[in-house]
Length: 104
Image (cartoon, rainbow, N blue to C red; front, side, top):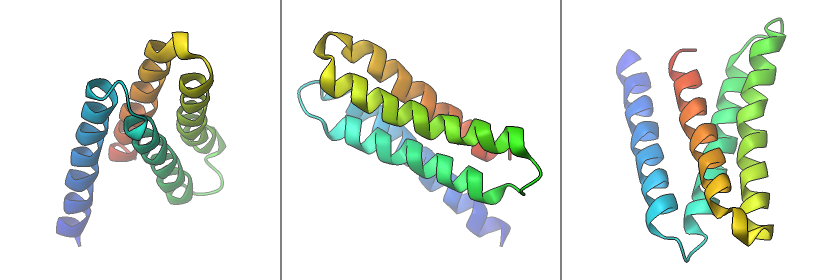
């Protein structure tokens, strides 16, 4: 069972690296923005559902990763001048969510 969990972590780590590469290398296309939004929401959902109900602070922190990803998508699509800020928010949301999930 531990090997399966380790494979899941490795696959998620590879998806994070691919997402960050798409985000910073494809400036013209929105595939990096969409990919990182999906990853941010996925990490938020995985962490939120893995925690018990009495850990309210940890569950709120897990929701913050998803809110950051959605906020970065909104900033990136509607404020063209703030693309760098949205990319930084995506990086914080996805990398923070993956670290939070790993140390859960």
